[in-house]
Every structure is written in structure tokens, then in C-alpha cells.
Image 1 (cartoon, rainbow, N blue to C red):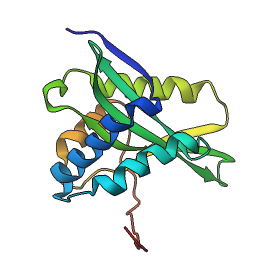
Image 2: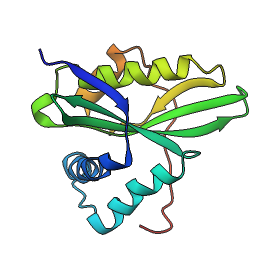
Image 3: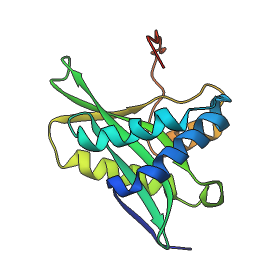
Image 4: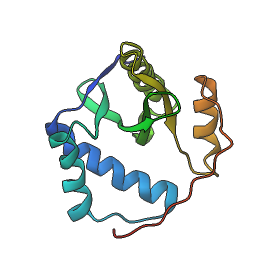
Length: 153
């Protein structure tokens, strides 16, 4: 088994992360994202750490996967939820512990800050493989449904 190195992403990782987002949207939703939009969108997070951060997994110097963490204030808990989003693992590295390693890293970071009350994520309803992974890591399905209204893309 190859060693998985997990770290916070740097702006130099933005190209890989943008490529992952494009691949993930096509794979999970059949949506084609515009590189002209996603590239600057990924870069923007690096200049706005108050919005969140990216985590990457490296195997032998290759970025094998990434995820994004954004923040949601919970007045009920007087703390922040970390939302895990834009999860992607290169197909050749799936089912090899890459997401598990990234999630463990995120949990370790969150555990060091008493102001973080939990982690959340959303997943496509038909993505049963991902759902099994999240459940195996101790996450529980909630009773909430997600609604949205998009103002622009």
C-alpha cells in the first residue's frame, strides 16, 4: 500500500482541485462546469480563509484526492459546523483509504478547536457507495432535506 500524505492545500494545488471539481460534477450529476468559472472559484477560497479551506491527499507526490471545508454558524450549539464539500478521489485511488485519511485529518483539526461542534456533508441520493463510506466512518444520515434557489451560475 502506498503512503497517503494529507495536508492543507496550497494555491499551487488549485489546478488539480479545479480539475477534480469538473470531473466530480460530470461523474455525479452529469453537469459540465466551466473551467473559466471553477478555476477562479477555487482560487478565491485561498484568499478568503474565513470561508474555509481545502485538504489534499498525496500519494507519491501526486494529488490523489481533495475536499473542501466551509463553515456554518450554529446558534443552537454556539459553535461552527464544518461542511465537507467537493469531495473527489482519482478513480485509480478509490477504495484505498484516501477519503478515510482526509476525513481523519479534518476530524483531528476540528477536535483541536472547542468551537467546532461537528462536521456535515451532503451526498447525491443515488451515490450509495459514498453513503456507505460516510456511515462506516461514524457519520449518520440526518432527517433534513436540502432545498436551494440558485441566483446565478
